[in-house]
Figure 1 (cartoon, rainbow, N blue to C red):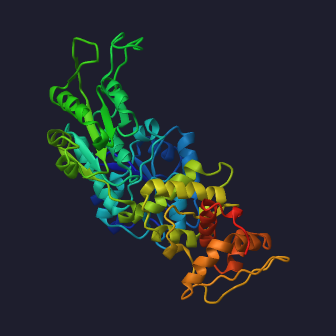
Figure 2 (figure 1 turned 90 degrees about the vertical axis):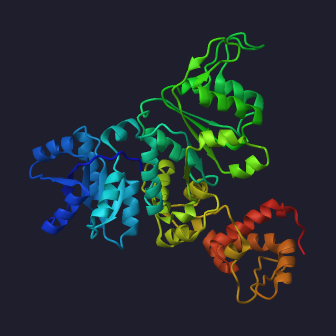
Figure 3 (figure 1 turned 180 degrees about the horizontal axis):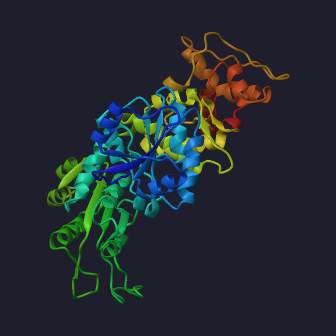
Length: 468
């Protein structure tokens, strides 16, 4: 989650189980945490006005967190809350972040390094108010290191190039570079260079005067002008047409822009952040990208790692997506089996795929618990999704013929059976049971495998297959 650091962090400390010992208090002080005493309601009210954060210890549920959030709102203070939970209370930690905690720490961790990292992530009060619609997750140590580096880069005026795979969160890091910079009160303007036709990109970037061409009925301020005093983010910059790269280079060098049809240039004060999922060095070798532009935009390069390299972000992201997309009338939870599956999955589609999976799970879930059977992944490889059956099974419905399903050494028979009769077998199982879970059990496969097989059948238009 995004943050700006300060040297001192006055904090209200609420622990219903035990007080802070002398040794622990010294370690917290080394990390920059200044504990504010609270004995009366008036102390609490005054403390909330001074505090940069509230630290609470959760015991079994999030009720204390919810009460603290209500109090801060009642007193008119948006104060970030850090929760301490037991090490074996993983689900409680996830639920705390879903309920609005900005970070969670083990209750027995007093190390100054750990607390410094946690404090560096704390949003300022102004950040909580003015940017409450955006919450960025940087929980894994790899992500925290990237955040610290990004905040240092943000304080400079150099152009930054953000690289990383599709869906990993490059625009999120670009927003961090803007929000943590002296330009944070200026505009943040973004454009995807791959999403627009070539003839529109130039006009969108640089603008035009009224009458500059047929259909130019009024002047248009390009994105560079709109971003004046702030940051312009050019995503997928490797897709920019070659001739426009030349014009972009000139704008970055001269810090001026001339609208199409205009005579006088316009001075620019813009910070450029570009992003790509391609190897620009290879694009340069293939004469698809200008080398001089590459050096101009990559004064500092930041790499966003794929989600599988920062597993500590997975569950906080899940909590965030459940808050964003989940029902307002009930609290959604994630079962231990589903948590384990989420942590083990390699996430080839990165954060974007995780967001899709969470949204699907909310559609498939029939209660307040996201179970393993509610998780439908984009990467459905047969090795990870088709369960092995130790012996053939037969499903018979009414007078329909029996269709055996085999596995293991009978792979040729399995392929033949899938092509000719899998639809009827699955439908028979679904119609003879009360739920997908029971149908999967009857078929001898996992619910996830059943969903995968049904998706394959839909793609093959299996309902049109003839029986036998």
